[in-house]
Image 1: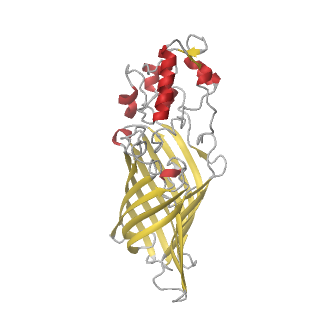
Image 2 (image 1 turned 45 degrees about the horizontal axis):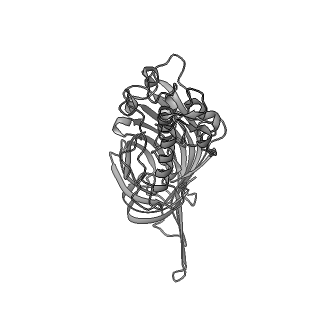
Image 3 (image 1 turned 60 degrees about the vertical axis):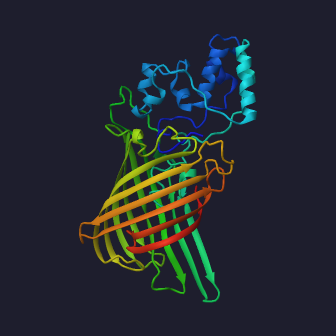
Amino acid sequence: MRMRIGAALLLLGIPCSANALTLDELQRYDKNKDGALNKAEYDVYRAHRDDPVLAKYDKDTDGKLDRVEYQALQTDIKKRYGGNAPPATNTESNSEKLFAIGKEVSDAKRGGLPLEDLVQTPKPEPDECLKPQEIFVRRDRMDSFLYGITPRSKALGASISYTGDEAEHAKTAKINGMVAVLPEGWRQPCLPRPDGYGPEHAYLSAFAIAPWVSAQGTINDPLKKSERSALSGGFDAQWTIFSGFFNLQAFKVSPYYQTDFRGVARSDGVTATWEPWKYEARLGGSPTLFSPNFDWYWRVQAEADARRVDRIGFTDLQVGNYAWLGGTVQLYGFFFPTSMVVPEFLRNRLNLVMTYQGFWDAYSSTAISRYSAELAYNITENGDASVSVGYERGTNKDTMTWLNQYVVRLNYKY
């Protein structure tokens, strides 16, 4: 399955699959209207079936993109889809599928492959453009960026752990999660390019306004002095612009209020972030698969966070003002996305996320950093749940807590 990372496919309105076609949809490939596909027609049909990008932009159904069709694509996919290259088909190694394909090719060569033989039962596919998801459960605000652009199976997800120590008569809960709600009409991920605008013109391509609540930290019973937590809430105003050197530029402004799990701490502030996407460098995502055995992309997000702290509570923040400047770099790796040489339970299930954050406070001239690595396995096919093991070291900006720990998590994503 082709990587559907970032907005390379979603914001362009490319469907997730071209496999489930009705008889009416198959008529576009029957150029001579004889009710069957000859060899040339079948080659184009199979190229479209294997490649949803080509299927969407090849309006005249000739198996390649002409100049007008070509201009609709971003510059990062010109090499893959431009020119007069003949239709390509995916390599298949499954013996049963190879037999079925061989029969189709044989029938097409002998004079025609009846359209009725190719009709498949349509399968419901998620369409983020038409029916936006209204509730998101993720790890943190980085994990929720742009709401729905990052597929659920690639997200980190929220986690909750509970420990009851009967010997010490102590109970501990650790929470790392965020819930965001997008009321109907508050998110538009697929705004069309205005009439008369070409690829060189900037335009608003998506926006989302979402109230959110985030819980990060630990709570103990009985209370421990070392307990640290951050319970915050606010709303995100996010939007994207197609323009300039980058394929996409994403912006976010988020006013928020923060306390701790016991309601003692008190601070408020506003963050502003900017994230560029350049598909040629796999920055923000990529519409092309790196290889059947491994795929990857990376993200860079610049951030400014202005905060006023009135009460310390169960954090290591100090009363006063903060003005953090810095950002986050993340590397995402995906193992065996379409490989046929590994068992099916490993295919497109293993994900690696490596994160580095660095910030500098303009008020105190304090510099902090934090890095982590997490390997996750999706235990459900759609990625709703995963188990992960990770390591994190550094200072948490929201609580100023020093971390140096290994973590095993059961994660839930929605």
